[in-house]
Image (cartoon, rainbow, N blue to C red; front, side, top):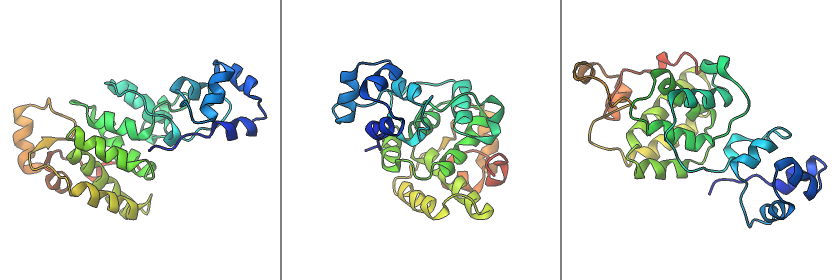
Length: 226
């Protein structure tokens, strides 16, 4: 299960009573009490309001119902999570759990290349996200190869640039490898032309070829990950 924010601990650290917390969060005191007793979960709206007073780790954000997101919305969330490539767009705090954001981005048929290039950074930056959930969702949605490719790029970059947690990423890569799909796909670019597909048949990067994907993306192309 995904970790959950300890609302009681946060409330006490801020010196709030349950009534004051309810007022700040725009809910009833009864709901605050139920959340603290484990009977209800924090909603994204409550966490958004709480974020104005307390620094919430994005990995503790509750999962929402998955939805299709535009390139612009994905870029905004990546910016709010701290991605350097979209630093100029940063505004406010993240509202999506990085694990769910990753799955939603990987499931996009035609993803802007700049967003696609940011996903290895997301993998490396949040190397301790709830990977069991991510891998299971990837299997359900047949995204194993896209996920594995992003992890491979992140792991190779972490090794060459002495960044992140390459050992943890290697373990994750091995885990995804066991369910690698045989059929060929793309890295979130199903709308590419036949000419592009033919070119990538022989010019795909070694990492993409391993994951049976049509993509020329290589670790050295990820200039904003460093």
